[in-house]
Amino acid sequence: MVAEAIHAEQVRKTYRTRGQKPVEALSGVSLTVERGQRVSLLGRNGAGKTTFLRIASTLLMPTSGAIRVFDRDVVSDPEGVRPLIAVVPQEGKPFFHLTPREQIYTYLRSRGFVRETAKSRTEEALGLMGLEEVADRLNVTLSGGQKQRAMVATVIATQAPLLFLDEPTIGLDPFARRGVWESLRRLTRLGSTILLTTHYLDEADVLSHHLYVIDRGQVVGKGTSEELKRSTGGTLRVSFPGPFADRPGLKAELEGFGRLMDDGVALHVITGPEKVEELLQIALRRKVPATVGPVTLEEAFLRLVGRSIDEEENGHG
Image (tube, rainbow, N blue to C red):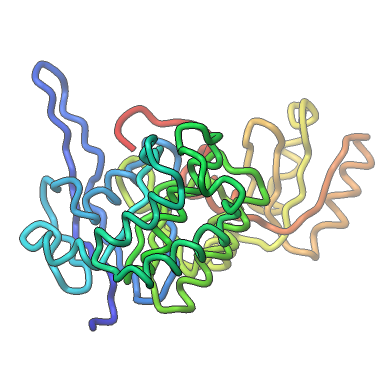
C-alpha cells in the first residue's frame, strides 16, 4: 500500500445559493497525511475543516482539485475508498432505537466482519470508551457525552485503515476526552491513520504527529506542534493580564523584548529566557502582575491567524 494515506492538491469548494453571493469554503487546500500518523486540522468554527473532511471521506464533491486516499481518487472511485475508511461526523447521533452494543455490532457486521470478530470488537470498544454500564440502554436515553462516546466507539471498533473524526471529543468531560486520546494512540500503533478536526488546542498539541492550521479555507500553517511553537519567535511567554495591559506606555516599553501579542485578555511578550528578568523588573516597577510560562500552541495560532480559536467565522465549517 502507498505511503500516503491522503494526498490533497488545491482542493476548492464553493457553495452557491440562488440569489446569494457564492461562499468559498475551501480556497486551494493542499496537504499530505502519511500512513500511521495522527494529523489534526486546527481552526475556528467556519474555517473549512469540516468541508475538507467531508470531501476526503466521499461525502461531498469538491468544486475543483483532487484528493487521493491510499492512491484512490475520492471523486472517480468513491466505492474503492469507502471500505478503507470510517467516519465520526460532527454532531453525529447514534441510532436512537439501538443500544450502544447493538449499534457497534450491527455496524461491524454491515462492513463484513464475521460474528465472532464483531462481538469481540464490540466488547473491546465498549470497554475502551467506558460504556459498559450503559451498553444495553437505548441510545435515546443516554446523555450527550455518552452518545458521543458511542459514536466514537462504533468507528474505532472498525480499526479501519483511515479514520476521519470531526470534533470527536466535543461535549466530553476531561476524563472521557483522555480516554478517546488513548484509543486513537492505540489505533495508530495497530496501523490505522487518523485525520481529525478540532478547535481544542490542548488536544491538537498532545495528540498530533502533524498539524495543519486552516483559516478562511486556506492552510496558513503546518508542522509539528513544536515547530509551530518555535515559529512564534521565542520559547517563553511573559503575560501582563487584564486592564494593566492598557496602562499608559506599557506596550511601548515592552517593544524590543520580543513579539507582542494581545489576545484581549492579556498582553503577551514572546521572548527568550535571557530577557525574562528585565521584563519582571518592569512589572515590579509598574506594580502590575506578570506571569511566565512556556510558549503554547495558542501563541502559534494567534500568530498565524491573528484571532483566538474561539472566535467563530461566518460560513461553512
